[in-house]
Length: 245
Image 1: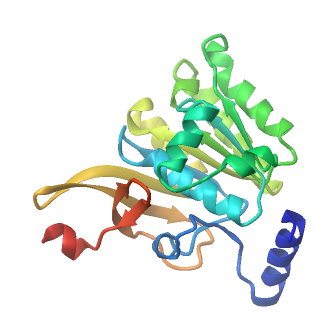
Image 2: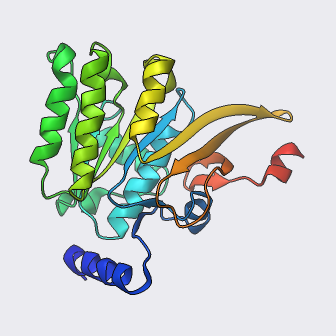
């Protein structure tokens, strides 16, 4: 089945039962905790401190979307193509054939020479990826480090307009990268907000995913999920009772 066939089937499903196709992580349990998944056509903010699991969640969502037949573009300041392949293979998420078939394009973000023009340049690059269903940015932090409040907000508003035209965009942002006031404004623009952090529960340090909002979600959000990153497995949900025990 081609990606076009898959998308046509999803549209047909939407017409019949009113459900909205979602960005899947490839894990039913994780999707369920995320209110059924992030609806297509959404602008999603994935936020958290360093080491909280943002890239792992992003890679899970990328792989799930590729399995569903969607075409992706990844703009990354975290990896080269080679290091991304290695990192995802360590989580049992193989993307080599998707890269070879052109289903996934990877663009390293090089912002050194762009300075405060980086958000504008990124947005223009997104527009040029007109054949992509989804755009992932991991992470935006370095690209907006020298930008004005106006330019950063314009970037997110531009992303929102692309989503209104049918694109799905997921943006990773480090919690420390922007002021609290600006971060709150960005959250209000986005359709979905997923916040990750590392917490001490009992005598253990665990990673948590808080689904603070997903507009148009199938089920209620507000869930907090504890997980660990296990080599060869990826994100593994940990029951709270086990964490506290």
